Amino acid sequence: MTAAIKFRDLTLGYDRHPAVHHLTGEVESGALLAVCGPNGAGKSTLLKGIIGALSPLGGAVRLEGCKARDIAYLPQAAEIDRSFPINVFDMVAVGAWRTSGLFGAITGKARARTFDAIEAVGLAGFEDRHIGTLSGGQMQRVLFARVLLQDAPIILLDEPFNAIDQRTVGDLVDLIGRWHGEKRTVVAVLHDLDLVRKHFPQTLLMAREQVAWGDTAHVLSAENLLSARNMAEAFDREAHECERAA
Ligand SMILES: Nc1ncnc2c1ncn2[C@@H]1O[C@H](COP(=O)(O)OP(=O)(O)OP(=O)(O)O)[C@@H](O)[C@H]1O
Image (cartoon, rainbow, N blue to C red; front, side):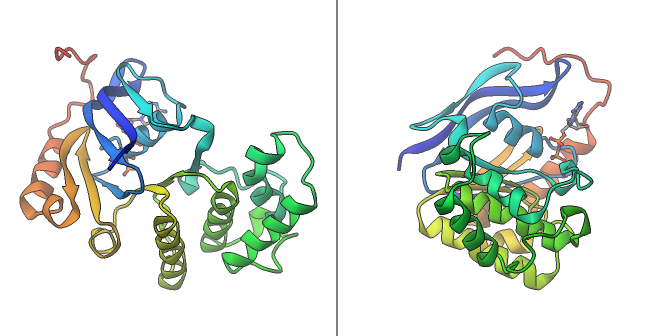
């Protein structure tokens, strides 16, 4: 298996305070990987490091055979400004920017693909709705439609099922399964461990540092989950810059 993303002694953080410590490992191309861990474990920070929104404090993230623009990223719902005056069609159409250019016009073909993506997530007829009027689950479908349109080889999803009903989760899990079948690399931050055990063959369990990484059944053992919890609780919020030798 070839790697899609490589972490080499990666440390990421804010104002020099590390949130992810010394992570080393590889996400295989075509992997369906869950990233799990307690609140504040550094999961979202890791995704931000992969897309290049955060520069490493130490070590490196390397994308193999693609660039940051080839990554589709679905942020946490809380990071989306729902008051921004944009409708569902335009929100999804942003996903076409790799082919149309950021300020390019959405041409006939891209328009058709946008309608198709909206239909694929079950939102046909919602095209003109302002995003501020959507339910949480409908908004999540919009974000998935945007990722669908991006047609990217690497897909990063940050808590894609937060506060989403079972039916929507089922539909979106099916979509993720489709991406996996198409040999895309999918990395998803998730809290629902039952869902991870059922649908994600590989898991990275972290608590600022890597606790375990590999086969999901092995990684999500009671022992590893306890270690992750203890490591998260032991974290000193006033900790200074990381001084561990690289
Ligand atoms: N923009 C920021 N500025 C300063 N500190 C931040 C920032 N974003 C996150 N942090 C801190 O970095 C640490 C890791 O946060 P992160 O959001 O990556 O955790 P997480 O594992 O995704 O947590 P959760 O499950 O609660 O979403 C936390 O202590 C958090 O407070």
